[in-house]
Image (cartoon, rainbow, N blue to C red; front, side, top):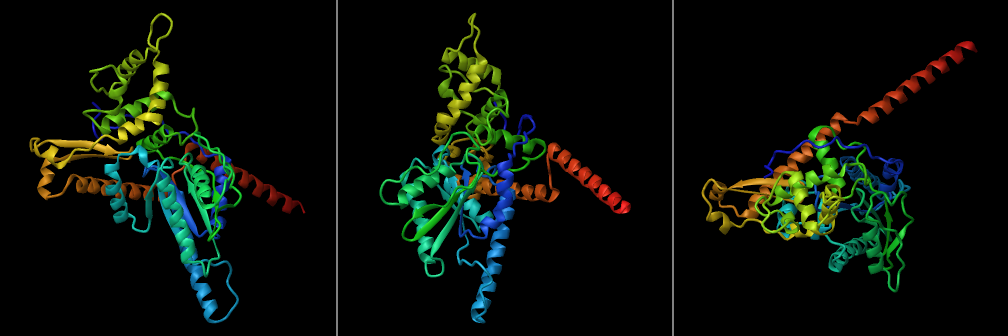
Length: 427
């Protein structure tokens, strides 16, 4: 079986930062200056990996600038001086955890409370676009914000942002259909592949009364996913949820990580057992697993040899379409279950692809429920992840490709400076 905390070596993360992402990142500060509400979308399966530290910096600056303009506006109002520029009393950030139907319900509240304790300035909402109630709840939140500030802000501007393939365009189409009476055509194209939205959309009206407008933005990927094991695992997680362009990762590496993670989430009864021949035991060996899967599916090459490559592709597709849901309905151990186990027994498990823990039965003496213990483990993981992100940001880690580009740019600038100096000497 895969063991908790023992992460196999994965391939180095690829560099995938298309020009349209870089261009939008440059536009972001100016766009935020005229934004009232930021809807940041993250994938519930990767609640920490889909946090973008670059965007976090932009959010901090947005709040600071909005407060500074607010202070200047209030002073100008008291002194009856000209307005210092655009001012809106609204500065709201809502973090929407999408695809909530693909993670177990029992982990949602512990995660919500853990995030509130570690990052209290973020308002967290879980949603699935398959559930109209979730769309209605989000629409109501936005409309209520617009109504609360209607006197000072005649219209509300909403910016929808997030990493690729988290469902930004799908959400905006659904909000538009809910907010505009009568038949509304699909305003934005959607795709299961990352990178379809390449430019900032034109303003979309989400509500007529009160007036609410929104922009759909290109997915913002990190310029570099990181070095070492952390960066490698980050990249492979994003590839599994189709957050990175198909083809940048070898399918065998994706299948190997997926097998490792499913064993970690439920060691005694991983979700993949439902697709293997009956009475097949769990395994952490990819070759053994894929061979059994190819046998069950009848995937054979000429001569009767089992088609492992085809079975690997099927396994990844199965997880994206059905396996996530099967993992999501798996129960966690309860207090009563732990009570009948020996004092040295441990509960090994996880939630999504960012959390894993080992809870010992002896910790029950603390008088905490399973849910409270899971929340504690989540808080530890979140705190450690954010601290590491701060260290990476301060270190200014860049990929080898970016280092070469910077060195080339510096050399070109040096040559240009020399040519300029020589031309001055001649004249």
